[in-house]
Length: 427
Image 1: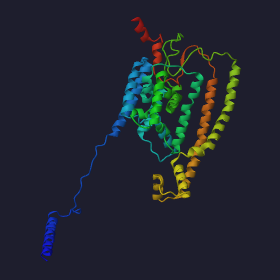
Image 2 (image 1 turned 135 degrees about the vertical axis):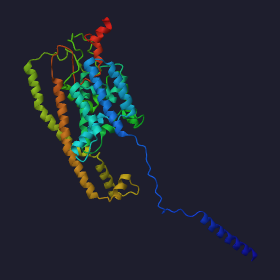
Image 3 (image 1 turned 30 degrees about the vertical axis):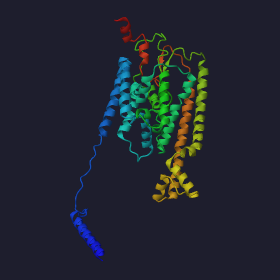
């Protein structure tokens, strides 16, 4: 009995001690009206950097135009290339880039609800404006992709004309499909498969890094393979460079056909007077061109029809069709473990009929835009054949301004240039 009394007294003392502790440490009052201070994070001034981007873009293109057209010097192009690779490449991680801006502009034209950022539009339009005025000065060294290839180039092994002609079609096809996938809101394939972005960001998709590295290795031995055979923006700039107001010249004096500049161009943009010297009657050439032009509509129509028929396959890369396929598979064979996309779809209500309507709308879009894309592909193929068949005699060495990337290598090969006369004669 005495032991029981001791236990009861102990419990009573513990209870009293607990009550005192409760009084000493009262429960927190969450209704006291205390106002927590606002948390502020120091964000970088992106608008300032975008202003610097645009300013530097215009300044570098203007400097290249001055160096190429006025001074005919290559050394400034090298310095511009170094600045571009350092700033637009590694510091700004290759974004925003003029090449990828094609997709934003295409989507803005197709979708009125999409508002294109001003900086992206300026990166798209400014190099085009400069190409129309001065040629492809953007490609010379302002574009970080072209600049990186230019800096590693040591030797230039010439490719055959047939190989160059075939590979030269790829940028146009790339451009057309990039626009097709952009206007259908499928994906931005230029950004998705950018071969140099992983190099500039020092990380990324392993396959793309390997591809970019292989392009750089190829650039050591031949001039700018990406610019010539892949870049869709370069293809677009070539159109405006062909009709540029102030054109690049090998020399401002009369060409003496010394043949020294023949192999100077890394992108084979110099045409010699000895090309296409096959003599033929004028009427024979006219008949051949008329035949090509008569077949051109047939090539365009056939290509448009083929791509229209193939549009259902192309549309499968759209996110709505991917989701629809997953939903149909889940409906046929329900699984306990489902993807994040399916889970989000069912959480939002999971209206299969509404999703099917979206899918049908996407397929119709692909049919419409696929037909246009196919027609453009046919037009590119037809005009390429016509261009290959053209035979024009030349009396002097001439620059093919659509292909010329304004690198300035040819200037140092021409003995007619004043700075070379000063260098070698001392006058």
